[in-house]
Image (cartoon, rainbow, N blue to C red; front, side, top):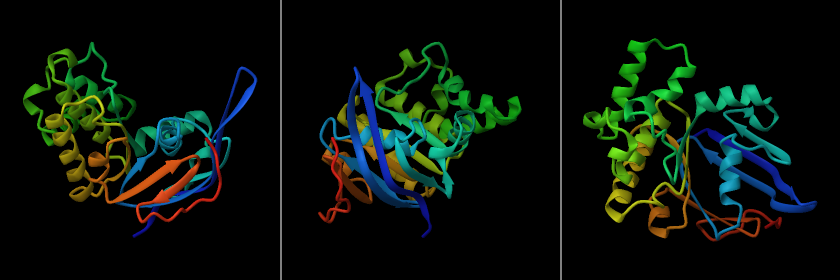
Length: 236
């Protein structure tokens, strides 16, 4: 299978109060199209930072991130925003739904940036909400939905532009066990039936075990699930 993500010599650091804080140093990682990767590590290990860099939410200090051959680290901000809208679906721990919008309107929101007409947008939204089992709840507001239902709305929103990559940051971290299982089952379907590439950050070993590949990040060193270190550089 072809490589979807190719990361080389990736470094990220921040400056706070005049202090230089390295987070990632010399990261190298390949992710093939259709893979389901779980990224684990202790708090402060940089796993969410790495996810944000892969998704184009943040930019590296140095190094390259190729996604389908596009060096997203070098894109101007406006072009990067357009690239994210078409290629990346986001799932977050706290859903990030707009409280004043219905489930339908929350899912439709990314399509407002496209040239699709109202009828086409409705068809796309209804299909996405049916896929996550919420066809009957599309007129409800977030505060009228359970946590698990809100997360499924967020997943429908992530799917709406048919992205090549889905990034999930602790997608079950705010859910009870039953709702978490429902969300993980849905992610399994997206990966195995629709071929979506998923990169997920989690601290839960049971959640991580759902992925096809497990990668640990600790002190700037990445380890695949076979236990072999694949990086030599250090960071925080």
